[in-house]
Length: 461
Image 1 (tube, rainbow, N blue to C red):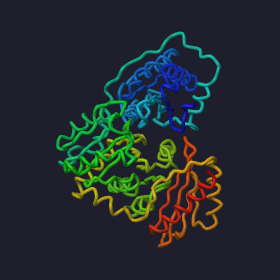
Image 2: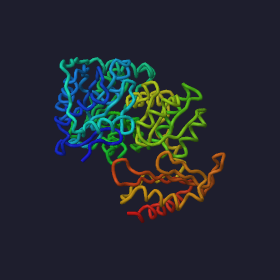
Image 3: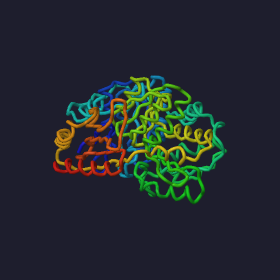
Image 4: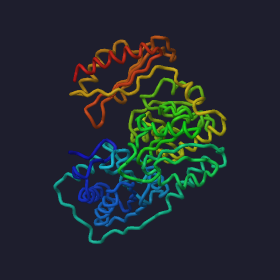
């Protein structure tokens, strides 16, 4: 079993992701990157301290100096790397994000806070990890220094972009999901005394006893939605396990799709930075492009996955990017995600507009959207080729930056009619699944085309 995935390393202790694995990983990372100083952080999982200790041993045995920042969210870790200003030439975060409690893993970033995944260096670490060539430790060991100043510095930075004084008094419910948001939120809320925060599951517990910390799954939001309605809150907020994704429900307890929330946030940022470039994930509704342009911004489509989006954000000079999976990327934070800054932007918008959250997002539901439908197939490449063969000849446009995205009945100027629709099909990075999304002007067209496409895909199963 390989623990090395597209964007990070994840697995269970029972399957071998243990202290011995972590120590060897530290040695392999050294042999590939030869770093002089490495920043190491960890989440609250019960296995994280042991993995952190073993990882550090693997590094320091090769003469690497380690800056240990201890408990941290992934955004806090990334910002710590950014604020190090290149003094740490590698960063490793011990976390399995939103995965269940028996999992753990590692995320890597280089000195410029660029994520290291398969295709950008993680494959080299995997090759060295699996190699039978012996490791040669250094004669002199590296040092370990502890730095517990990063939470305060992180909060100083994000509140420099959205001043707490710009946020009105309001009542909100926040579900930390027993994850790392519970480490950040108490200090963040101290800076917002006018906000009456109803805490839900702020105690850090790597077994996730209440629900999976994954806001993209609407079933994980039921307790939050109930609390919002029962307590009369203006909004409900849900973090994932390592705090790099954030989801919202409105004052009625209705979950808000990640792409539509991007529009709400983009409008705020475009008022501050007129004409800026905003990136949108290729699975996003038509309305995302339409509204960004209407707000005076520019927009480009991106493929799915944080490492690809961060690269495009940097190369294009984009101000902001959003992903259907509720990752929101901020140029002001080295292009990385921060659920906390995203929350502050939304609170400011609610304060400035005087509107309910439902009034900001519900008008954006202009089209019939299927959501992501997964199909298990024996050959994902063959399934995608079958879809291409069936639909390419009649498509208005075809985009192949990630799987296949085709539009139908759309004019060169973007005009649409009652027959216009589009679909996206992609292969999963980790499972034998094909992921399908269909959107149409007319709900009946969406349903017919969705079912039609599923038949084509499942014929390969």
